[in-house]
Image (cartoon, rainbow, N blue to C red; front, side):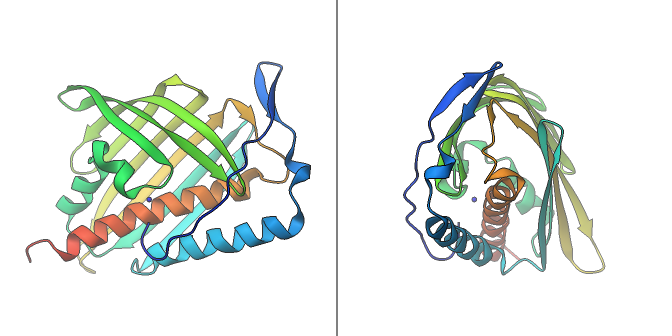
Amino acid sequence: MARGGAALLLLVQPRCHRHAGRRRCDNVERVQPWSISCVVAVLLAVQVAPGRAAEDLSVEAERRGERVAVQARAQISAPVAVVWEVLTDYEHLPRFIPGIAKSVVLSRDHSRLLVEQSGEARFLVFSFPIEVRLEVTERPPQAISSRAVAGNVRHMSGRYEIQPDAERGTVLLRYVGEIEPDFELPPLIGVAALRSTATEQFAAMVAEIERRAAGAPK
């Protein structure tokens, strides 16, 4: 999800092997501390730029057993119709959401959709392929929920909520989700890296909403 400067990162594919039914990646110790620091700085620079226009943008992540829970929110100056338009622009997500290479609507039945996505989750200097098929339920114009029904994740679910604020003339966009990947997160990466990825993508979603809102009829 990027607005602002572009950054070129050299992504290292981790060496993984199966361990108790889950992939384990164990070559993290090969990464030098200075290279991790540099990449963290680049990630922060990429994340901050897209979020500046939002009045209030925050992302939190915490481990819950084998899963990582993410909560995000942003106060956006945009009409509800524009927010909904961007959130449901499934097939164009790769254009403005980093990490998503493909997003295709396989079927639609009223408010239920089947969406297939592929891309990568980037954790510092590491990247992991993600392939998932999502069952999406729309409740216009208040909420969109999704859950993985196939793919290389053990669990993935999420929900967007749109709450207009008439007094401020803005929209509060909330996101809550959980993910349990089919691999063990390396110990030097963990929740902080997932928070970085979520922040980058959520900020890019907000940036696209604000970009379209700026060109919408008043």
